[in-house]
Length: 193
Image (cartoon, rainbow, N blue to C red; front, side, top):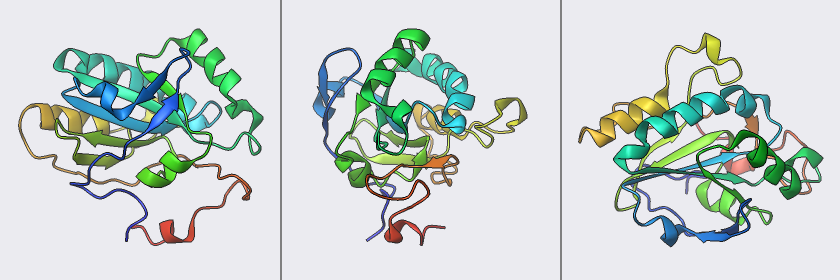
């Protein structure tokens, strides 16, 4: 079985606390036409380098019923900056147009097969996966990017077209797994193309 979700897979359920003081479950986003779940964090330069492009993509498609949900699954023991308190501060500072959830147990990161930060998953109305991978091709320095894969996938899907490139390799820092070296990845994730 593949480590990360495959095209056509259903979105795994979750119930996680958010920086706004609420707890959110997957079912609470059932009104969304398209749901973008992405694994992110507070410190990774690939996240911080591309957050504003992710914001623009989220805002561009919001009127079409696209909802973004960010999830931080990083171990606070690897990077203290990834603590829930820092998540709250980050949202207060940047006011990103998404819900920011904390996956302290890392169960949801494993359920989705999150590899890196950021790692995007786009689900259709039935919550079937239609795109997974990177947001852009140069998330650390978006002034050098040549393609926004996430925007293209959303644009194509919302137009009723098949996503032309449904799978890309996520680009970023690996998820920081509890009790592991900062660069460790699950062995079953290492076979991915």
